[in-house]
View 1 (tube, rainbow, N blue to C red):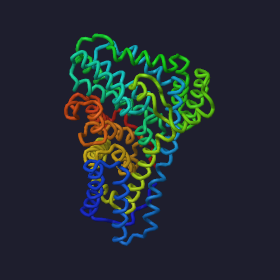
View 2 (view 1 turned 120 degrees about the vertical axis):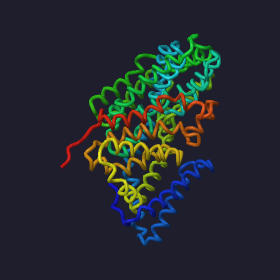
View 3 (view 1 turned 45 degrees about the vertical axis):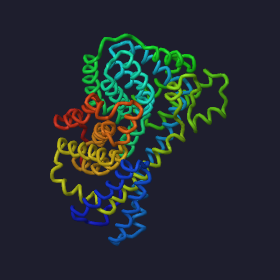
View 4 (view 1 turned 30 degrees about the vertical axis):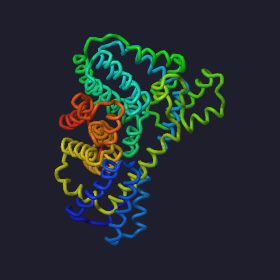
Length: 460
């Protein structure tokens, strides 16, 4: 838990400080193109100056930063294991095998439908919407061009599938961030998201199925990709053993670190069996620095060259900074003051989830950063969910439905800018067709209104 507030601020003052901080962060990210870390460090410095003016002890503010960052240590350790799992699943052929059969089964179906489904599968396998969009997505855009299909709809299907996968993957940083920040077991969080994800997947699939032009089978680009995947990766049902182990342990509700450890160890064993040239030193480098694919197909290299502890450092440092800033916002009474102003309106699931959704979406549009939308919104409303007797996994799901999947719809957001660059389709062009991303906030609000999938815990 964060420290109790040292200041009791009037709402107008808290709002001014919050808008100033968010304005600073958003200006740095959107206008100056800085990585989020620097604007957040400057924001923390400004908050400390504000605290000094308000005569709050520096030692208390330092303690607030540390205590805020401490709440994310669970996520930090999970990130280490996720990095190792990704790299070993690349080396053992687990992820390549999942991708290969995903393409084999779906890429000959109606175009937009297959784009959405395959991107969902790949996104879930590798836990990165960016990597999925920049590699598999680009390949599908080539297929759409060859078929003279709509690039805007194809991009919408890519974004929908990639971010569905990112949201549901146990390898995703945002999925782990939402669960660990609120203390919700990872696989309980993923299971709970099915309440909104399954309807969203079904509705989106149906829409893309009927929008699709007549299929003309695999293009040469996809065929080359699959051939290279077979030549340079271990494609075998045996490679799926680590995936099965993780799924079984997850269903048995084994905690994240033992589950991920089992997935890592089993995939390391398979990697040594599959590749006789693999040495202990090479495997150690793969665990730390990530797996590197070396083939003659650049897209394949991009998809399968990732993972490792080192790859998670960006996310870990960003999480610690954001949580430290959140700790200061609580300690100085800024968030408590704003929350108290609307507390009277938050009397049930509908109003609470709507407030959560609006806050997460607002931060996405105002700051353009999905991590902050998850972290700040989660810490702001965590106490209110507990007070009203709602299980925190309900909050975690709402954060993903309105934080993770909304960022690609923001033209100046980190995801929106990235996707426009790699897909060559502007954000405003693909937004009307990113059906899953558009549906997710509506479905989570609908669940709040109908109480479907809303869990409550026993109150004292």
